[in-house]
Image 1 (cartoon, rainbow, N blue to C red):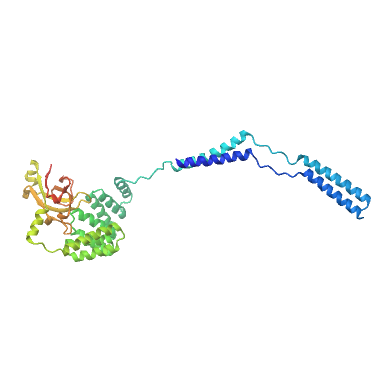
Image 2 (image 1 turned 180 degrees about the horizontal axis):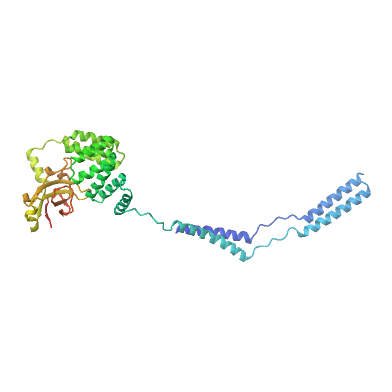
Length: 394
């Protein structure tokens, strides 16, 4: 608003000055030509008389020259009657018309420019994951052997938490192009999550293949560190993660790696607790989970099903922190999860705070959730409270 006020003030000042200028035109300091011509004629006559006295001219020449001066003077005096003409001041109407033009034109131009700048532009909306998945599927319908598209589909499905479908897409990309190190790393990471964060078997193979293609790939080095942790090779994991920190260009990834590396060093430097301390630690950090089963799940056909009871972080990826896997026929109704049930040594159950307890009944016992699985989740709990959680499978 202040910009408009200043512009109007400046325009008004300019218009007022223009009006004054038009109404009071500059006066021309015209010379009095008639007076000047008379004086010039007198001077010439005086010069002729002097020439006559000096004997330079005779009386006849003097008379003729005097007549010529008189004639020239008469002509010049006649011309001065029309010069200079009196300048007329412009009419009030013309002044107002010019002032209105200089006042309105700049404002109209400014308004036009600002309206164009502020006009709503059709912003490109960021496509949702669902739209991205649909676009990739449409692309694959036309080029089903596009390994890159299958990889992109795998990643998009992973971000949508559709782990099983993501693995199928990555497997297809792997079949078409098994030499893409980044794809192998993403495939291995997704597979590890699907099997409760176990970096063994196929996961280890995929990570090894990725490092054979690119030994300096930070993501592959990161996963290789977890493979080493699962194999209890802590020094190797430390070397791999240090190398990943040096090679990574992402500050956020470096921060995460440094934090994990710090936890690993603390674990290596920690002294073995005394039996009494260990018992105290065990009882001080645990989650008791009671699972109620409906009558229909107590039938013999469900006896060989697996009950997976685990703790996962309340936010972030659905990686189990601690887990027990029990045949339904062997389940007593209660499970107590402690640090001994932690999947990764450097990420103990006792080191977490806001978590969720999960109970899932699976026929196959696979870490990948199946459509027929039955699952129950708790609200957010704090491990430090040694909570007792009641879950009910329906």
